[in-house]
Each structure stands twice: as structure tokens, then as C-alpha cells.
Amino acid sequence: MKFDLHIHSCYSKNLSGEKIFGPSSKSMPEDIIKTAICNKIGVIAVTDHDNVEGGLRTYELAQRKFKDDILVIPGVEVSSKDGHILAYNVYKDIPKGLPIEETLDLIDEAGGLAVAAHPFNLKYSINKKLATKFKNRLAAYEISNSRSLANGRAMEYIKARNYAFTVGSDAHSLAEIGLCYGQLDQRVNDVREFWDAIQSKKVSFVHTYDKRLIQRAITVGTSTFLYWKKIQIYHALGKSVFLPYLEKNVEE
Ligand SMILES: [Zn+2]
Ligand SMILES: [Zn+2]
Image 1 (cartoon, helix red, strand yellow):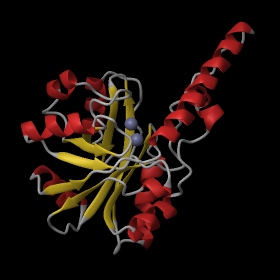
Image 2 (cartoon, rainbow, N blue to C red; image 1 turned 135 degrees about the vertical axis):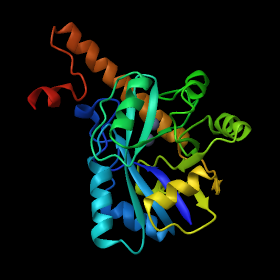
Image 3 (cartoon, rainbow, N blue to C red; image 1 turned 120 degrees about the vertical axis):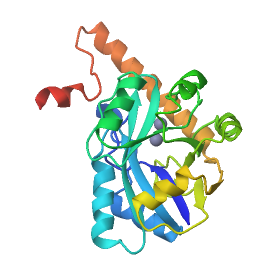
């Protein structure tokens, strides 16, 4: 039974600045579910950046229309100050920008399970020191992520310690869903059985990179450069600089 526990939807925040770049994926929940089913993936999670809405919509839609075909686990990818943490089985937002310890506390309080996303990657990832320090608080580590350049190091670290692991494509488009996937030895019928299988390490995985990595690196590099240029211009004009997501919180 295949699973992909790291997919982004059109509800995902853009880490480079929402107002200029829009959501970081254009994938709609229904299209994500149908693409996963076509790829024979039996378990998925939509884990958007700092917003649980896409995860919940996908979960609810699956409950209503695709219950016999796929198991969807609600989730979110939290931008902690120390790196991205995937939170599963959560039904509300976990605030971004907090130290990892506080982030893990909030995930616990929400009844969720925390998984280290793309560990040891250059950007947005926890380092080895933190991975080790919080080993008892992390339900698992992401051993393979199609967008990470540190899969080899993550694999070596996790295998040497026999830690539980998950796998995620980190798909920001429909075409990337299932690029990386985990394989369970047994069929699972619900979320509990799924996490039991992960904890008992009855899992193998297929590890594939997104072949458009260089093309994407150029796009991300250009968009980040333009974003910083905009901030410089705003600064020169004496205008207040846009801080991602802050405005929305103030309105509420
Ligand atoms: Zn991430
Ligand atoms: Zn991600």
C-alpha cells in the first residue's frame, strides 16, 4: 500500500510572500485525491505551509466522496523558527515562527503527531543537533522528500538509529504527487492502523528526485531576488514593508 504524506494544495501559504507570489501550489483538493488514486496511492496527507485549511478540505472531501478509495490524514507544515515540522492529525492552525520546542508543545496540545520535514536540507530544516535533542518528541522523520537535497544524509541518520520514518513528495503541483512514496507491508484501514505501521517500521520507500530541480531553483532564486528588491524599493520610499500573513491576522 503506497503513501505520500507531504503534498501542498492551493491553500498553501507562499513562504516568499503571499501577496506577490500567491499560493505555493495551484492543486485543488479534488484533483489531488484523483491524481493520488490514479497513481495507486492509498494514503495521503495535504500539509500546506502554515494553514490547515487545505488539509481539512481534502480530508472532508475524501470522507464524503472517496472513502473506499483513499485514506486522507489531516495535516499542516509548520514553519517553526528552527525548521519545518509536519503536524498530522491536527484540525487547527499551529502558529508559525516559534522555536521548535514550543511548536512541538502546541502540536501535542492539539493531539497531533510531529514529523521532521526534509531533515538536514539547506533551507527550512532542522539540523542534526535538534533532530537528536527532540527524538522523543518526534513521531518520525521524513526519510525521503523529492525536493530535498539531503535525503542521503537523512537516510543514513535515520537508518543508523532505527527511527520511524515517513516519505513525502512535497508536491507543489499535481505532476509531482507520488514522486517519492512509502510502501507499507500491510493494508491499513484507518489513521490509527497507519501510524501503528509507521511506528513498527513495517515500511519501505521509493526515493525519486523531482527532475525539474534546476529549473525550479532558477524560478525560486528569481522570485526571491525580486521580493527583496521590492522590499528595498519600499524601504527607499519610506513605505512600510509587507510582512507575510501579518496583515491578515491584524484584520481578524
Ligand atoms: Zn518544507
Ligand atoms: Zn512542503
